[in-house]
Image (tube, rainbow, N blue to C red; front, side, top):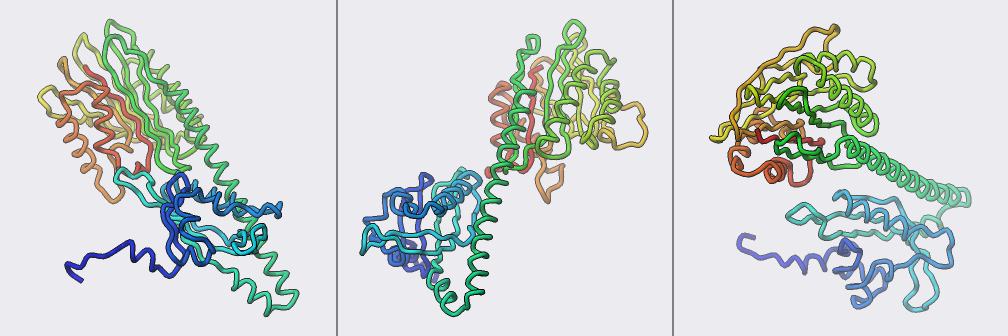
Length: 409
């Protein structure tokens, strides 16, 4: 078949099953011949029209749920970009030969997204297998008891789909609450003294992947000193968001009175013992002092901050790394290191969602970050933050949350 062009439009029309293409607004973009034949509709009655104008629910059946179930499935596909297979549906269709009369029909639908170059859903493949004759044939062959059992099985399948839909809505509500909680606890910061800063937070894709990433910026006692921290609580959902809020507040307070980042993390470790879900939290605390032009830092198992020099070189602050919170049976003093900086350097703190990928060594992610920083070294913190997210996050969305803080020194 080399050099042979494939007529995909002809292939689509010749497909043996019922297949239609829908826009994300649920308007028919096309339908193959088998779809039109089995649904009893002409192309003019389908293409260009809204799905539920063509196939509304049976108005004579108050228990009809086919339209609602199909709408929910298609909405999930648009929202998640993932395929959705539905349970067996009873979805009656108005007779084309006898308008006003509704024919009892049974369908087994599968809805699949077609993604555009930017990862968004541009079309929906609506594939349907009609099983009406199969259900009727089996009913004719079965005795009364078997027909009762089949009816119960159909009812249970419909109930299961409704339970699944309620669970999806509950999970979506939990994600919305967790995101609102994170947003409330991590607002866009006011200017830290006179220094330019940019912050970003990107939640993971998927309804259950809201995690416990956080950042914090605070003015420290002294002539010109600020503290910046980034942390990551293990876990998902509201529990992780609540633990994150407690740890963030505790570290912010500890950094104001501690002698340095190491002492602040030591105090945070003591406090974390009383916070449910705080085990194995990673966090890095930094202190920038413009009087001495030094950055003092300490890390509890967190990816190292990156210091972008004016000449484009990148240094990772990895000389004071200790295990995460709660990883040791006993509390011991944490390490601390310092590095000098010059006016115009840039400090970048982040969580692992920015650099880590499955089946990939972390050094690969750090190299990718360093390369991106060097490439964009001449731009200000705000556009730099956007450039890093665009360059480093997967186009289809990250599987872990990402927090990012950039300070122009």
